[in-house]
Image (cartoon, rainbow, N blue to C red):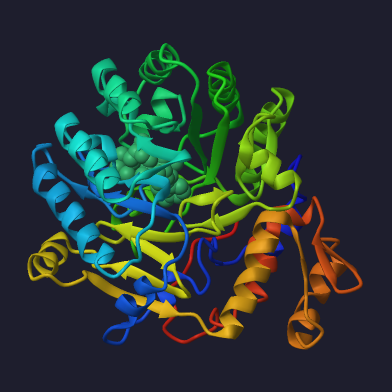
Length: 440
Ligand SMILES: C[S@@+](CC[C@H](N)C(=O)[O-])C[C@H]1O[C@@H](n2cnc3c(N)ncnc32)[C@H](O)[C@@H]1O
Ligand code: SF4
């Protein structure tokens, strides 16, 4: 992407828009009819991807936009794992025999689970869905929750992609967001994993937090690069206090404005570029050799709820509170309340709250949006006249160009890819649609 875009453009295109990990996006989801999920499950084909949501965290980080439940004791996870496996059984009753090509544990904090519960979960999943050779097993880790023994357990369970929440290394920035965590904690965890051999390491970084400025961010970037992760996710802090009231406190602490955020992004982009990383999609970076990078370079990168992936063609099942699954032409999201979710499972019912059955038009728009978001170009059908007209100002600002039917997002336009994709979103203007975070 390189360099910060001009301030004037940042201000002019600053708007609310989705990050398009699905289309239609989750606020559009509605209750599904009786039997819809079961019928779609019976149409699942080929190996699957499974997302497992573990909502628990010990403390709330003030910026957090994830679906979390703050709990003191880790033993709460024991019954939860029972529920996850029971939910998987309820789903697999309908699914033709299949195998597992991708397992992703996200949260919350999966490593909040006691090691014995983690082991029971992973062994329980692979007993029901045999692991395929070359399968991708990933887990999100809060470095503060794992000791060396826990990390060894994860390696023994076959995880091969580890993602650590870093956000920033500056103790003062971390204090502002109530996430006390040291550089050494992250480094030691990474060293422990490295002692066990090869694996993919992702570090999550965020920009847009209170207290961030070019001076401290330069130090954070140098520390990040010194750990040599294979991938970096550089998240723009999504401020959505109407959904996450704890974020409101951060306004009083002073959030960076869009100009400073663009500067921080530009610094990260330059530092990662100088260290040999290449940008993937909107906000990911990877070292050469990473499969995501090859996918980005060959134009086959895909996007789903797990972010950017090379395996989004798989039907994606999901278990756990709030988990969103995407398979056989539907999206299905689980209940968010753990009590309601558990009660449904106990009653032998799928704990799905809402979702979406994609129409042909949804599928057509989804493929354009995802292609733009991932590969920065897409063929636009001639009948999309309204959309073509809406793109004129973006063309005038050199954010997009046309070559026949093919729309391309320029390097400058990549900063505004959410704006470009929003043009193709039929539901954005729907009354009652929830508000999204700002694009800049
Ligand atoms: C589930 S957490 C990662 C695992 C673990 N809970 C942790 O914090 O280390 C997923 C990631 O989402 C990102 N994130 C959380 N809230 C966000 C927000 N409001 N805006 C942008 N990114 C956010 C953070 O970078 C975080 O590491
Ligand atoms: S950022 Fe991670 S550890 Fe912090 S509250 Fe959110 S999910 Fe939990």
